Length: 361
Image 1: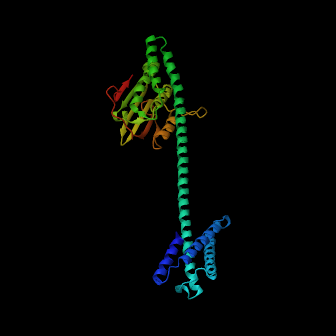
Image 2: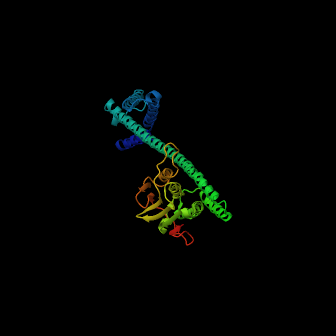
Image 3: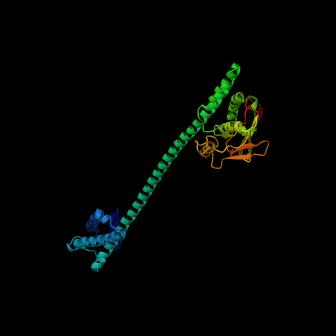
């Protein structure tokens, strides 16, 4: 296309400068074909591996020099051979013959260099897009692996809770062995609670669902403790609707019963409160008695430590689980405070759900 444009320009100039002379079709055609062939050979020469790998600061000037010399030499050979001799408007000097050809060679080189730059830019964009796609694929794989690891870890944490509860529940059944009706009632409550704990694992669920299950849990524990347990619930309706990780309160309540029974005077008093304030859910599990530090020689606690880890994985690093000790209040109290963002809620609880405040004795 370039050399055809050059040929058309030469013919146009011939018509404009020498309208009365015949058109130089043959000389123009020979020079167009010669320019095309010479420039193609030069291009193929510089596409050879040794030359194509040269730095552009060396390759480009070398290509300009070779292309100009080769084109000039080809034109001089044509003229020297008497083929397509110069017309009147280019007869003045040999330099006048060569300058237009050298200009054409320079323009051809500029076009070639421009196409190379465009090709390099296109390749760079393709490479960037491929790198971004690879990075996104790696990130997606990492996210999938992280999600799988979290799911496995959460299942492991969930599995750690059940044996401890089953041990206490079986003790409660054993404590009622002389009362068949009590054994039946405890067994039914235990079955209902196990249906909750061993059901399909969910990442989040409304707090009201766990509160319903805790009624069954406390019924089992009531059979175990009898009159030595006084438990009070106080949860507002906004707290019922908050979406939380499952088993949020049960492990802390289980610790309160386990360690409170060891350190508190009877009856053991336990309270559970839940409220929403300023966009935060606050759950407090308190019991009479003293704080029992974790035994470092034994396996880590599956209560507070496990809950902290689950909240960090599922909710946010801002979620906290704090322990407050008040040894001088009414014989001593231990409080565990859970605070987490109350960003997800469900519709308000229906009439059959637990009332916001209830007391079990």
